[in-house]
Amino acid sequence: MKQTSILALLMAIFASHAAAQSTNSSTNTRLTAQEVIDRIQSHVGVPGQADTVDTFKAGDPTTPVTGIAVTMMATMDVLQRAVAAGDNLIITHEPTFYDHLDKADNLPLGEKDPVLAEKRVFIQKHHLVIWRFHDFWHMRNPDGIETGLIKVLGWEKYQDPTTPFLFSIPVTTVEGLSDFLKTKLVIGNIRVVGNRNMKVSRVALSPGASGAEREIAALELPAVQVLILGETREWETVEYVADAISEGKQKALIVLSHVPSEQAGMEEGTRWMKTFITEVPVEFVPTPDPFATGTALTR
Image 1: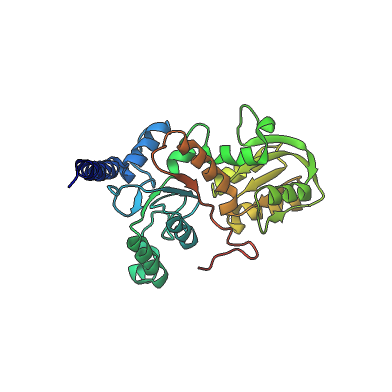
Image 2 (image 1 turned 60 degrees about the horizontal axis):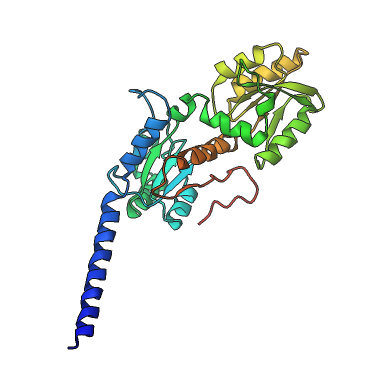
């Protein structure tokens, strides 16, 4: 064999060995799901909580992360799109398994429920890891969910400096405000309680499901004309507003539904995570609005 051929062979072997070492090194140094979550918790600026729903809901925390999908709710549709994109760590704001604590006990059939069972099989088949990011994101100062929503609405300049959930917006009607929200947040259907022609400028914002106590406390403020919220019970806040209107009080309620009211907040979370997680892709996977006409919820 000629000397040049021997040299070429040696160089090829060396290059192959170096590539293998590089691949092994990359695999060994890839962030695990636990390391990603530890980094998020170190950046969020909230002390550790003993009582929190922000825990792993599925999968092995030691799993190397190939990509991160951040979402409002880890529905099957979201999980399918995450897998298609090569993401195996799902960071969700709301529960995955139809219960606040992600326990199957509240389902009549428990773990034998066919919808739950198929979802678990899908998660296991694709080696997904799911972690909930709810309490810490809300407890952050400022609240991460509200920050994202306010940015999308462009209401930063209208926000009350001492009471962050209050806004003094340019005068409009209840119907005009409802149409604005529907367009900005891409909502299929919005429910309104109140006179749609009533002029309003003083608004309270309560995304998600904060509960009747907080919602009614906002409505009790004399200056608040309309409360915008995610979801609520009809026999609590809805009835309260209906009675206020019957009594001649200038009050109105706009119900966005839960997903679109907090969706922008998790998109904000995605932008925030990208500032300190650079080793793997971090992408926002929006949750379809289940009440929108034509929403793609099928496979």
